[in-house]
Image 1 (cartoon, protein in one colour):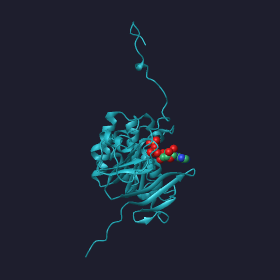
Image 2 (image 1 turned 135 degrees about the horizontal axis):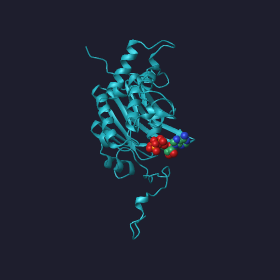
Image 3 (image 1 turned 120 degrees about the vertical axis):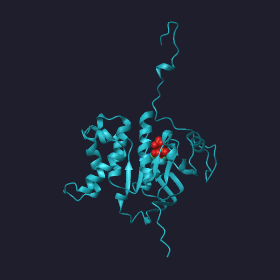
Image 4 (image 1 turned 90 degrees about the horizontal axis):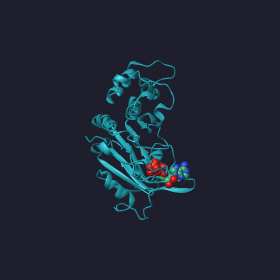
Length: 276
Ligand SMILES: Nc1ncnc2c1ncn2[C@@H]1O[C@H](COP(=O)(O)OP(=O)(O)OP(=O)(O)O)[C@@H](O)[C@H]1O
């Protein structure tokens, strides 16, 4: 007897998305298999966030076919199977919530309305906190945590919902190196448990050893899909030096207009008395 093939968590064929009448994604083919740890990379404006929003049903496709866990997106209803870890900006957001409360909120999709937390809920919350190593911080307010610890609290919140597929949006953005290393350890434990992870990142840094597949976007198309690339190679693939797939358009210059135009005082020359 043959076992029926398990449908992949994500199957997108010829996906296209237009925003404000402008094509932003074109001809995107992407299959994510169970247990993949995939890094979605590329320059600013290359279409990473748009792709994730399309894959999570937040943006409609203008063309193509998308299935989640073998179900066409229009019919898909098992949203609790997806976990989304947003950028850290939303973690504290002025709400005086404790780590435990933030993580417990990730359990909401499993609870019936107005019912107290079940033993299974509490076990899932405790386990999620343990996976990210915040056991000694459960009663602390999230706003008192470092950036990396806040990011781990957000990962635990997604984990508490026990999803089968995780999306992480720039988890290392604004996180210092020691905390990036701690974050990598948490994600390593997720990987060991067989989670399927789609990680949006500009640079992988300490997360690089976890990644077994890189997808690099360029101008709304897939420029590379295959072996994990080191950060410098992603830079090349995203900016036009590597030609794979269907990159038939010239690479755009890197958009830096979202960055404030500041010069560090340390860049200024010293005067004769050593002052700037
Ligand atoms: N709401 C919108 N309306 C119109 N165009 C948009 C909208 N959101 C994004 N875009 C455009 O779509 C393109 C892809 O943007 P997207 O945010 O997906 O890129 P990204 O790779 O995630 O960039 P970043 O790394 O800066 O987050 C860009 O040219 C962007 O200007």
